[in-house]
Length: 233
Image (tube, rainbow, N blue to C red):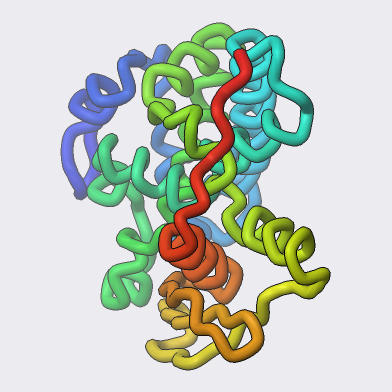
């Protein structure tokens, strides 16, 4: 079985999972611009896949790092399940070539947007769960989970780390300023700078203000020479 974007056999090879019922996979790849009814698009599978992903990653981190406190586990999980990370996994799996969207979305190259790629990946995880059960979904998710550097925990939530730094030394937080916003509504790009009083700390770009602020904070941490905490496992 295939679709207009290629052979689903290749996608299953990329996933490392063979579906017993390919209708689940086909539905996971169908954007709401093609199937407006809830049962005809991937949004319900995305809802399910998000829950499976959160539980899988949480369990994995809990078992792998028995000495890390809850706060640091949450930071690592945030890194592993954030939109940009999931979109990167989706591209590695070539989901951008398999995602089925309407003509308008094709013209705007919606298949390349991080938000849609994140959604379709979660939908695929939900499809694997329904087709093969939790153990298979867990195996597929962990198979593609990226490595992370335990010495860079503080950089995972760079904005919080930067704020903690200035609260300790000056009792005041840094200030984030939006300096540029460009692109159409469906594909905007934001540029943010972070300052402390009159000191320029860094600049970041992202598809949302929040993402741009995190990137600016990471740049600031690099400029200030603030390194991540060492893993305590």
